[in-house]
Length: 371
Image (cartoon, rainbow, N blue to C red; front, side):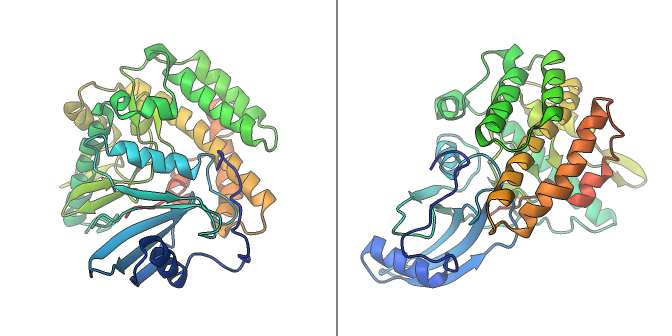
């Protein structure tokens, strides 16, 4: 399967056929060569990039297995990275101490499944943080603890030996500290050129600005890409698995801190602000081997929005080419893309811009494939 390609449907499989408990039981029986009993096969209702199912089965020896099945949407993935890359990322995470779900296998036999998929172990936990939404001191405490745990986890990601784990071979890497922004921009423009779509003059303007004002990275590290509430698996207050690696790259860790959904907003306790973006950065810097500057973080807020716009432009091509595109993909290709365009234009001083709160209202960064 190539990057951004439309997966082929298996011979004899109609458009109405898809992953199901019956199909999964039959697939496992053929693969294991023994009877199996599927006791759960539940589709996760959220997810822009790809589809997720939670499955449980018992093998012939009575052993119970809990797994997560990941596949592209019938119309195609919601972002221009491939499913096999996602699988390879999880496989390489196994060479680090980053908490993650262990991969099992990748299936791309067109005769075996409606479309390619892979399985990984299901990690016990949930993306929800108990008490997070409460508007009282208990809620403030829950948000603060979760945000601090997330900063510790990001520091762990950035401290990992990405070269030894093979991420450079898989993803590419900047040529040096002064090439982090250039590498990121080339990566995004390369994707844009690969999948095509309508002309994007605004993105060319943003790319020129980014390249002309690029700061040097404090270090080059593995960067998760999509971060925050809804992306990680929590259990008893700790992150036990980091999920949603579609936007992973090797680059400036400031790019991760620039987009931390739900874990960098102000928290007030006893009338005093105890957490916000700058305090989150201070906490991160106390746990990471190499500190990140606020200037780099601010710069990457624009750079990451540029990358998001490339992703949404890709989603637009998915909607255009397939009648099976989801409502969420269509929404991303229209309303969300519209607001990101306006924000980018405003940042360059060639448009009105938008109130940053609009993105919280749109919930534009939530993919939530945790599990």
